[in-house]
Image (cartoon, rainbow over all chains, first blue to last red; front, side, top):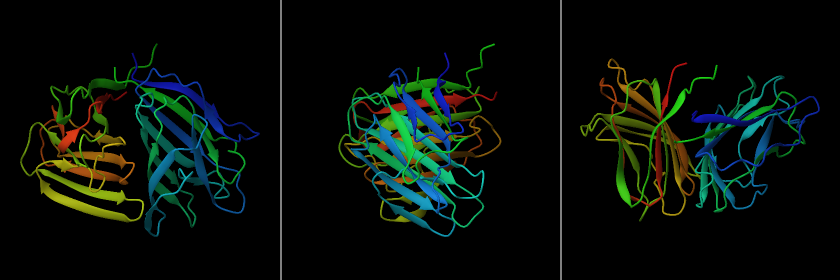
Length: 167
Length: 165
């Protein structure tokens, strides 16, 4: 039996998509991994931030981030902030975003790890490491990512959800 | 033809009682790289997480850290340690699981020292990345994950092997 299994994937079409949603995630895996290539339709700013919903809520989520932008580093804590991606940046540049979520079906609080990068050969490229905590004991069955300022992910944005089993 | 399983679960442990050390032994050399995934809470207080290979307790380990605490970003290093200390400030705490993802590259070669890349996340303390070096040319056949103080019941440790296609 494979231990690294594609559960579902999304490729955004010509009309764009307001969000990318994976629902009815079965509890049969040990960990989840979500890998996305994203660009939002935000105008007037080269970046957009990413929002994450777990089980369709953004409550009880907290995080810390470590950021490098090519000129310096910083660290902070912001609610509803899960990395940055390209928007009105260099044409065809998409941000990369990876979420690792261990023991997602457990009855404990859920800690998770995010790596994100948006390189565009321009003046503002950002890479980040993020730790997140969902302070809820409910099993996770839905993950949703959406742009914070833009209204949609543009065409050719993609996301793949994998299940990892330890057996 | 079905695709080959290139990400193989080698072994996994879930603590049934508080413990400060777990071992993966008799690791086959059949894989290209190893991936270690840990999710642990502390039984009593904050504690750091270390790796040792093949039972080597000599001062053959060094680490460089990149870390963000939520208020400051920093980089640090330790040289000639008796174990690879994966987290500088991101110690395990009692309530919220730490996430450790370590990639142990080319672990079975007998020519080069072994490098480990780790992402470590402690929700209430810090996020960061660590590079570790074990100055040995021996093939890695065992991995010891240990801490100064016990982890809590239910902490999980899983080892995967990556196979070249």
